[in-house]
Amino acid sequence: MVQAEAISMPAQASRQKLRGHRPGRLARQGSLHVLITLTAAFACWSIWDDETAQAGDVSTAFVATHLMKQLAICAVALVGGLAIYSAGGPETPAILMIYFGAQTGMNLYMKNVLSKIEVDKEEGWKGIPMGFLLTGIQQFVAFMTFACFLLASRLTSSPYQAARLKGNDRVYVLAFSLAFALNIGLNNFSISLVAISINMIIRSCLPVATAATQSILSEIMGTDKMKVSLRQWVLMIGGVTCAGIATWAKSHSKSEESANLMLGIGVTVLSIFAGALNMVLAGVMGTSLKLNPLDTTYHMALPAGIALLVPSILISHPVSQWPGQENMTDWEVLKQLLDRNPYVLLHVFTSGVLSLIYNSLQYTMVHKLSATHATFAGNFNKAATIALSLFLGLEALPSGLYGKIFVLAILGNITAFTAFSASKAK
Image (cartoon, rainbow, N blue to C red; front, side, top):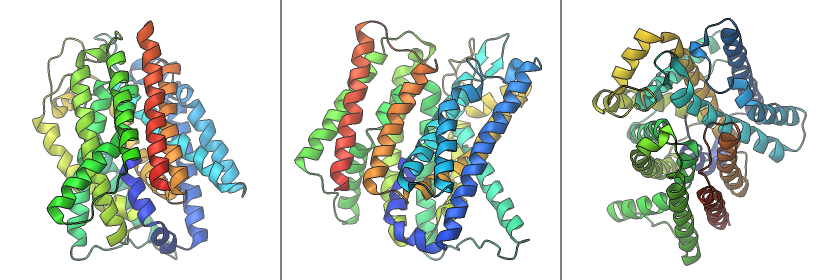
């Protein structure tokens, strides 16, 4: 899964450059085609999943409900936004609907892939707990998909020309690719360990990590420091405090994810600092490089995928979704999947194609929004993802008083960081 935080900064920093890279009409058509493809991919995959389950092969079906039922609200938002956008209706509401449908849908999809897919019914194994390798496979699939697109475009009258990197551009892209690999790899790893609500609530603390990272790098590189007012620091500290309270309340719920809660929290915190470095480098790329969304994804996919092979081989981690199994590396998880149920890997490869579409969609949509609207959309989508995960049964509220504290803390966190982001936008 690729996060909006990883791409929103270069999209906003190079807003005018991206608009000028392609004629407006072609950019509009490109966005429309991306949306059609994304919606079709979700729909086709759901139909296949339903047919598989009905045919008796429940090993690849999702545990709770079928995928389309879980993503119905997101699909409605996508289709509704697409209809408004293509009909020439109000652009901002349409984009916000598309942004919600794509981002929230992708988050829920990845949670299903990492934690809920039925791998071995007899043993009670669920999910594909290989966050680093899964993210690497996504990058390789995205690279191959884009390469096929380049080859196919050569058959047309106006073939697509990907921008070439020159001089220091390669260094910037390599550094960004490594930060991106850490950011998304650690995030997917954390999703396999903790409830999606905990992941979302901690990831919302990204502005704090970004401010700290930028301050450290400014001392090292002698660049301008990030300007943060006292009011903004108060809002950030309030948001982090609420995140801590929500995590404490959630620790009192009884679920299979509670066993690795502390490890999951630690991994998620590491992921937001990797995301912060990702953001700082994205700001450099946005002002120094002339890369559009597709070119950015294309150039960083291969080095990011290769970098993710290292932790997937070396890091051993819990696989609590697989009863009776000790710690395993991602490669050992892959071997078990190939032996027991190789068909579940179709979900992994599908997520690679969707991640390419999703990344390009995010770039395209975010740079069309104002900073204020983009901020509102990002925070709203986090809250909506948490609400939907509870509503769809992907997780449960802590019992009694802890449940009320959890909900209030989430509201406090989202409110604090929304106010902070709105303040920065002004």
